[in-house]
Image 1 (cartoon, helix red, strand yellow):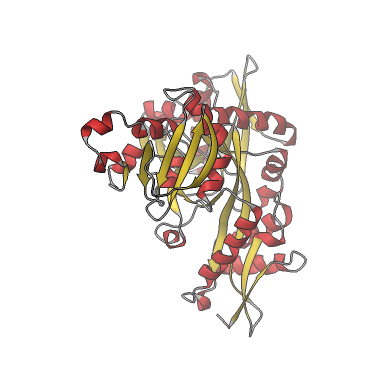
Image 2 (cartoon, rainbow, N blue to C red; image 1 turned 90 degrees about the vertical axis):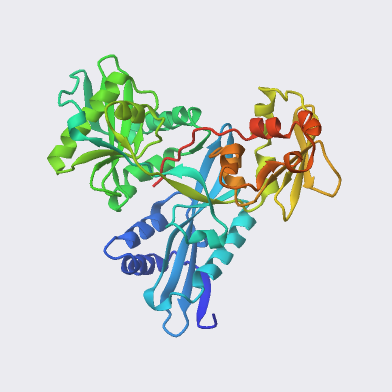
Length: 423
């Protein structure tokens, strides 16, 4: 490692260098243009958002990555999320351990700034060595053949490009989307401004459409200009659209696909989203889905922050007003969640004493459970190291009075979640 210096970026001089480096690493994709756009225009990006390894002899960038800040909402609680993004190493500098060093610097900043989650949309099979685990759905392939869509578009629905004046409406649509999902992205006016202005100059650019029917009901859709597959991609749609508006949107997309030589329409949406259900009922095929890779920097900090969510879940179910201890046992350590009158009053390290509720889950599976991606029973189907402790050590008589299974099920239920991109 003594060949390299690890540093943050100086925005006064490193913008053009970042562009050149990442364009070369990802050629022919213009990832460097996207990196420069984020550096100059994206909300909350700063010098400490970039982590670089420079070769001492040449002064050239050898590897780099970015901390892209997000706000995610889990029900009514907002989480600070750090995305490990735009990760690249120059060909001559690979297999030198540079990314491990950059990731260590990255995690120091994550902990210093108090982020609750670290996420990545990275390639399969690489980032698990850095502690990332698949924990939220990402990137759907719901492929709808053009012949399954009627050519006749309802005449009472009109379409136009979205503009800056539509931002208040788009922010409201994000709020409606959040109410339909347990975990979703928080995008404010500054994010929508970027999406509709400077974000249009990168390979992540999209068409944003506003559509409206004769009664004045409105919706919006996002159509990325680039993406996986050869179909016309629809990656965002208003949550509250009517059947007629959904059919009109699919008809409009069919015409766009035919004009652009696209052989099908691909919905990159949650399978339970309204437009997805309409497409699937019309003959669309649900293909494979990927997932966000998630790392929890500190389990105690995350759970304390989520206390209002967890308390509300207990209040609505069998454990309203619950008092007792729930031990989450990660095998190499454990945490005791102290409940009093339905409130999570404390979280402390577990000890050797027995407690009323004791649940075992390997730490690499906890993000998926905590964020509602999978129930504990779904995780248990492939991983036997997920179980209420008494199911392995207690008698059946003891298990009758064990609240663990139901308590964990109410605290961490599987729910629909989806993250709309912020760039």
